[in-house]
Amino acid sequence: LASGDPMGAVAAGVSSLALLKVCGKSGDISAVHLSTAKGQAHLGRWEEARRHIAEASQEQTSVPPETYGEAAELEATYGSPARASSHLNRAFSEGVRGPGDPFCRYVAARIALEEGRVQRAQDLLTEIQGPSIEPGLLSSRLSLDLQIRATIDPADPSLAAAFESGLS
Image (tube, rainbow, N blue to C red):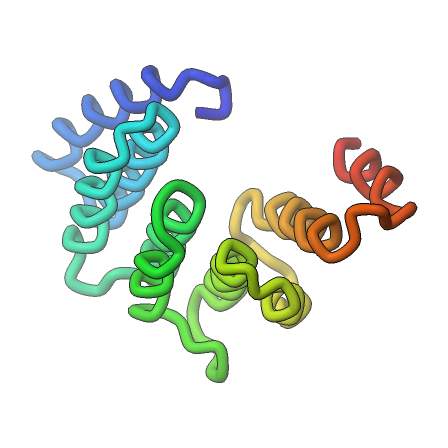
């Protein structure tokens, strides 16, 4: 997907799943299902994407919270914020910090923004604490912060410089 080829990402995902189902670990299989779901969503094949999302969370006996967080993010971005919340609620509590908390808190902020709860989105984003080890989370946080700020005040004179800073 990073190279702008969702069809290639889907094809690679389907091929990988065929191999991993024979000899792979359940965590790897879940990750490939989620990557394939993202490719399907980019192509507008949302029902197929949802099938992969469901399979990702069924693949493991103990599903890591990030799996539910990523499923929720896909649903919030391409589908329904209500369904996104349902996924996220399986692994995340706003009041209790737990495994996967920074990523899940970021996803909760994205869902809140999609639902029009801008202040709640901003509050959740500022609650993310500590260094993040998830790849890409720092840039995702920056992007969401800029979206929230632009939603709150599209005429904010500091936005242009913030966007430029984020691109460099």
